[in-house]
Amino acid sequence: MAKGLDVGTMNILSSTPDETGTKFVQQRNSFVEIEYSDMAEQMLSRSDVLHIRKDDKVYVVGDDALNFANIFNKETRRPMEQGILSSEEASAIPMIKLITEQVVGTANQPGEKLFFSSPADPIDSEVSTLYHQKTLESMLSEMGFDPEPINEGMAVIYSELADNNFTGLGVSFGAGMTNICLSYYAVPVMKFSIARGGDWIDKQAAQATGTPVDKVTSIKEDDFVLDFRTDVGGIEGALSIYYENLLDYVVENIAAQVDEGDVEEELDVPVVVTGGTSRPDGFEELFAKHLEDVEIPFSISDVQSVDDPLYSVARGALVAARSEEGSEEPAAQSTSSSGTRSSSGKRSSASKRSSSTSTGTSSTSTSSSSTSSTSTPSTSSSSADNSTSTSESASSGGED
Image (tube, rainbow, N blue to C red; front, side, top):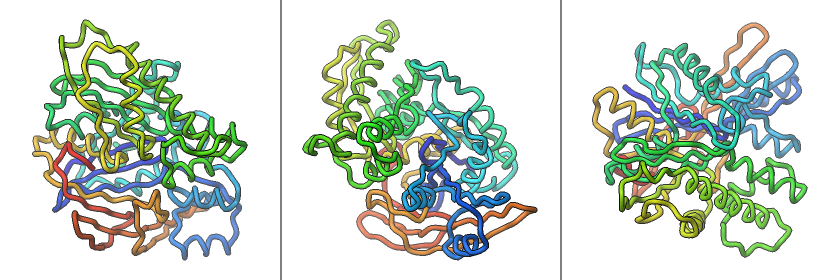
């Protein structure tokens, strides 16, 4: 059974086929360090908080990390920065391995096919993605998979543009990078990334308002709307300003990178925007407006968004993996989000269970957040390890 994996700077998500379509499991790609004590260890274990102990430190990992960071007025640490493994974080590889194991599990059989997302090299930075890609490939191989990278922008095309013969412009607005791919009948004509995304917005807004970055992130994820009606000087006003600046930058680079000689004359394509940074209401309309202001050598039929853009890359990776296996694409989708916190009111919490293991001086406790299943138009609950699930009827490559 094939699997897809979206390894993002902010979130890691897996996608696997199940009886109703596709199940997604999600965990925040972050951690926070706290002092160890016997009492703290007991409380974390009882509360099903995902954590790992090392010497005299305890690392709270995943969705719970942001909660702890806000409570203790600390900044979360990230295994990844600007779309790739962080060279500044000594714990990057063990932490991302722990989170990935919680999300994707182990291979059902040796050599199980798994496609994982990998960004293109950014055009505005000297950063190389090769080390990041090869490290993840090695890590996933050790977990029993047969891993293969897929360009993040191309994964968006596979996920959302099946009905358009995989022809169009896919733009994934992630936390660390923005990935862009123009495809013609599933053949990439142009693909590149930009070293700016949601993290860049958060940091700029935090610096402008004197607010901790994690606090800005929480506000952005909590029903923030791009309506430009916020008072000047507030956090939401700063977020709106830097969102618009990011879109200006992305659109200018799209126009600069398109080679007119590579584009079919009178090409008319849809544009699909996905990624966690594109979630605020008003984003799609604002991006469409910015695209109207630049000259590009092809026409845009429309600008589309999806119900929950967070799942697009993981879904596209699964489509590619199943295609490699010669399987048919799933006809329905079910989504599952790991973690105990609710984001933008789109996740619910119903049940938990936990387990812990220890080896030597280190101990790991796995948290299992609630599982809730929604199918249009009714909802129901079910239990799954370390995940909150939502299932919805949709065709593959359609809305998520």
